[in-house]
Length: 283
Image (tube, helix red, strand yellow):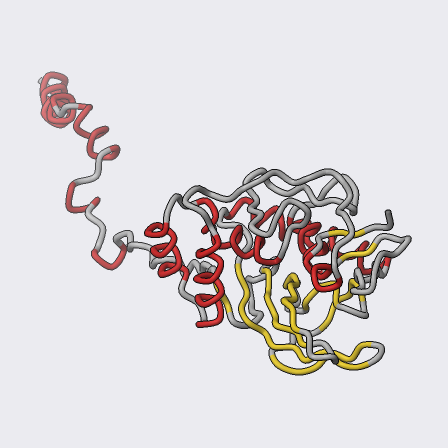
């Protein structure tokens, strides 16, 4: 009687475990309950705050962070009273690179209103505005990545300014010639590689600072007066810019005034036309 009783007792002990579904234990370990998986509100994924992406303005009135490569315009007055437009390129450290009358290609601290001493006198300088040269971010990255590589050799070479009194036997650059070479570098420093749609409102012989302004603002590519006025309103900027654009728009015909760059050496021009030249060489 002892053996059957012992067997009976063991059967009673082991039977509940044998009848319990094995998968229930496995499932309980592999799949927590819904209550256990529910994350507390504090631990829930929070939406990321919007990133502060600063887009540099298209028009500026001074140098500033994020404006390397911007083209700046000044009104300069020579010692004899003659006035002309001067353009330069903003560098990453907010200095200006330009080719200035009497000084040639060099870098200088930004000057909003003052004087620049040159041999034989001083030029009065008044800053007008600065513009982003390219609308596309990729084009701006390319310009900024190559900016100092393009500027430094011309500064070290001390390329002279194309003076008003005639031609030189060596390479010289007007302010427009220097800026053009930085924005649209050619195979040689003599000729910039202007875009095919670069405007020419003053004739076929020279690219001017006015042409550059039309290109930077995109007004030359618009089909009519209404579209140009809308673009001007969107550009905004100081009164000096709006007044200049209004004057230039009056010179544009009903169709975009564009032309390809000429490969021949510019012809000799009058003294007052010389500052408008991109590049001028002897002969």
